[in-house]
Length: 105
Image 1 (tube, rainbow, N blue to C red):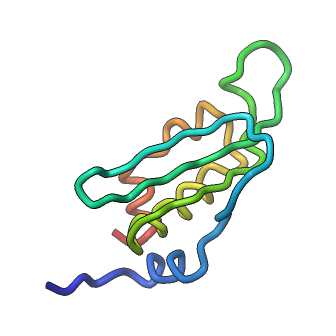
Image 2 (image 1 turned 120 degrees about the horizontal axis):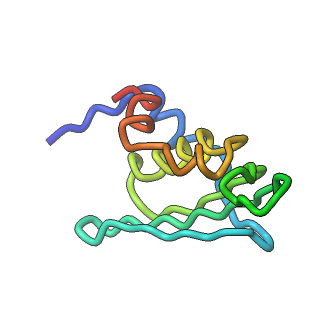
């Protein structure tokens, strides 16, 4: 079986953006795929907006650590690129379709 990756997937696999640990993150999430063994941890730092509505806080920095295949690493890299600079509310709206589209399908 042959898997053809898009140029963007290959680029993000060989040169992942925002990869690595983050000191003192404001938020941490972990996800994985038990079927193939991929595991991703993502950390964010946010800048608070005025008021108590945390949904309007802005993602200032985002880092990931992924153990997995080329697609898992490229996807993690792209998610961090899409989330950076967005509000929490906007970042929560990033969909699988958005990520796949940015990576060329």
